[in-house]
Figure (cartoon, helix red, strand yellow):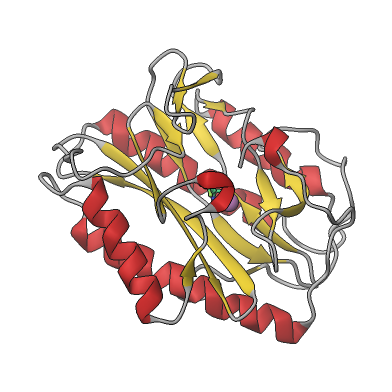
Length: 263
Ligand code: MF3
Ligand code: CO
């Protein structure tokens, strides 16, 4: 989400009960299943508009509502960001995937009172080693961040570990977009930057649910928004990748609500 767009009316971090977390598991499992199906559909020749329609249909089939459609006027169910596009690129029937592209797919639903939100970046057909590497580093950065989502840690322990891993690999973390709390609203407190100092920020508590979402660029972290008002691209035109999971903080291991396996 855009940092400046977070305008949750609630001023505190809303803790979820175990029952609410199980409801959120259901919303996020719908997201996970649909993203899993997308893996089989992404190939050269397919349009991003087709993927959007697929997601919308699959959500409705399961009794869920696509979360992004209508959110602040966003007109689609899916964000489908190619290559130098970081996030929030609008799907189009005119946009055909090509061999060698990388495609970030961000999808969310609302189901039984709660939101689910997750993102993956996929190679289209055969891609070069550069593309594979940024995808792998971004996914691993997300999992390293998730490992820090344990009660007693500080919020920026997540941020710091993501930033450290990404920068050690020669990439930058995007600054203009952040992860977020999630629950009955798509965007709740806290904001979760992908950069920061370990040991800082609020103390994590059992019952917090966090959408952690590193966005990584091969070059610099500056982004530019295209004239459509949504698409964020890297200012230097470098490649970008994005992964996101919705995670519940527990006293033990983080519960990855948007993982098919839930661990
Ligand atoms: N995962 C993105 C976010 O958390 C999705 C928002 S796209 C929008 O901000 F279109 F709904 F804004
Ligand atoms: Co999100």
